[in-house]
Image (cartoon, rainbow, N blue to C red; front, side, top):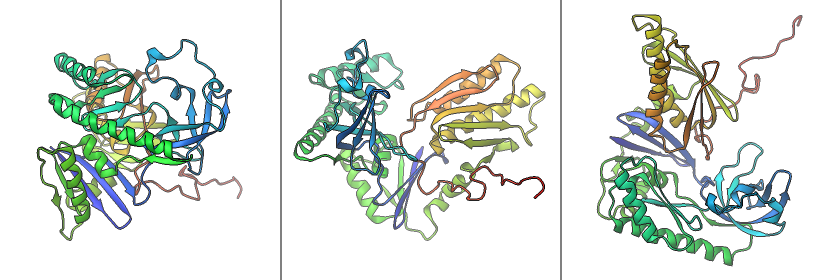
Length: 414
């Protein structure tokens, strides 16, 4: 069973998702600072750089947004030219263009934007110009995949594209069609605002953090939603009523004196899960080091001694670590290249057991993740897409003395 725990303070909303009591997702959003990902802007092309095959677009933020040539070409690969054109053939400085933010600005970089527009609904993702119907890979039954693809093909018009989401499995055509009608109206509103606006201008913002998680990860008939703000409860019920007009499990208003995050052991699990050193059941440890685009995770047996032989002990440790790493990658929203240094195993079948265990956990992650395999040095490589900022309210602050290295320089003789 899943539980959504929402903690509201004066300036921030924090959200935790529990599966059978274990914390699997966490996010926070400051008031008046809603994330940009998913938002639409009418922007103006400032620079076109053929050497980078990209353009910079003014969308009204501190830094100009970055638009790569692949994000200007047709969203359907079969409709793209055999030879990729120069960005200069597609865009000119001063040109107005509708863009959607696909990655938050970070560091000194502006937001990453695209013209491959998507509008996520409850049952589908609407793409106004994609010209194809896709079905979530997590729907395994071929008969159901064919049914959903057929529904999508009957419903879509002209250039429209649809992706049927995992939750659309076994849903009646009427529910899917209602979702499409709503998303079409949303796209029409965006285009009308663009026609009436002067660039740069915000055309459409994505949902709030609570609404987004309800839409993407919540079953209104089975899962529990607990919120410690009466105002937020009313807003959530209003959203649920639109999303599930046939009824939903009541939202619980938590009004006890003890913090909701303490009562449901959320804060305790956050404190254990976001450190550099993470102690696993039995005493094994993970050492978690993150750079801007690379995360390295080191697995150690430490005090773990279970198993009848060294190989058995190592394999058990690695299996336990794989399960926790899969959960923590999702919880910490780790992105980019991920290298896992499992303890060396002699038998190939044991390495496969570890890979299978990790894959079984990450299938529950809604963010696109790929396990690439083992390197010659025995390291496991994987990648995970990341679009949003680190979880607000739980971001480490770099030490001004050591610069985040954990070491302070000292010259010999001083």
